[in-house]
Length: 130
Ligand code: FEO
Image 1: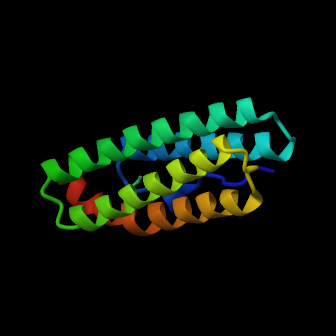
Image 2 (image 1 turned 60 degrees about the vertical axis):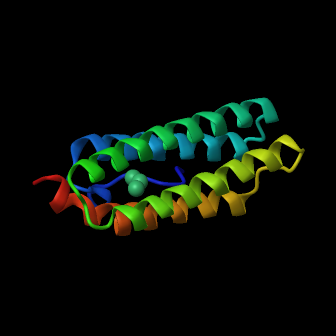
Image 3 (image 1 turned 90 degrees about the vertical axis):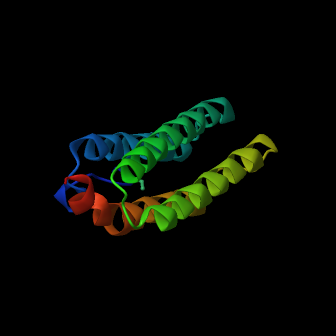
C-alpha cells in the first residue's frame, strides 16, 4: 500500500502545483517502497536525490509565483520550505555516513507533506489565482 495517496483534499487550486505535488507524493512513495523491500543504499540514495532535486524545483516555482503575486504569506512559506530542505539534506548526509533510512524518516516526510500542502500551500490558492 502506498504511504501517501493524492486526493482532492490536497488540491491547492493551482493545476501546476497540484501536478507537482502528485509527483512529489509519487517520489516519496517510491522511496518508501524501496526502503520496505530492502533495496540497496545506492537505489535509496538515487531516489532520495531525485526527491531533493524535485522538491527544490517545486519550492522555487511556488516561491516565484508567490513573489510575482505579492502573496502576503511569502516569507513564512519560504521559511517552511527552507527548513524542510535543510532537514532532507541532513537525512541525505546521514545516509551517506551509513545511517539506514528509517520508517521514522518516512513518517516525518509523509506528515510534513500532508501538513504543508493542506495547510500552508492551500492558503496561496486564492491569491495565486487572481
Ligand atoms: Fe508545495 Fe509549499 O510546497
